[in-house]
Amino acid sequence: MSLTESSNRPAAKLSSDLLWGADAIADELGIDVRRAYYLLENKLIPGTKTGRSWSSSRRKLREHFETT
Image (tube, rainbow, N blue to C red; front, side, top):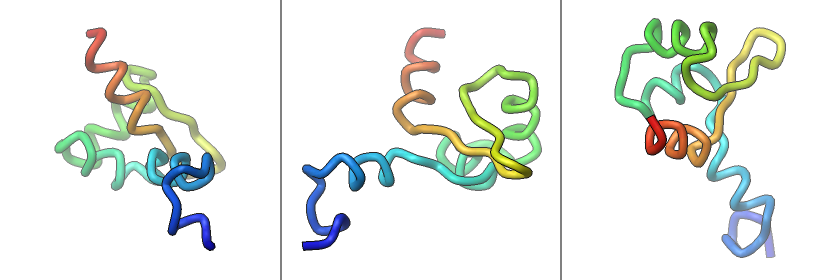
């Protein structure tokens, strides 16, 4: 059984929660990419920069907007 076959496995849950790149984050939030970069660079939304790429978690973004 592969990790993608079972959503009960932690790795499968993690990979479905993770957003890679400002494009994916912008799509998730329904905003343009430039705005996503602005929000990420100014730490206005949760995200991590690894090298030249941004990543974030759907859960952390959802929690962020629920509390603001």
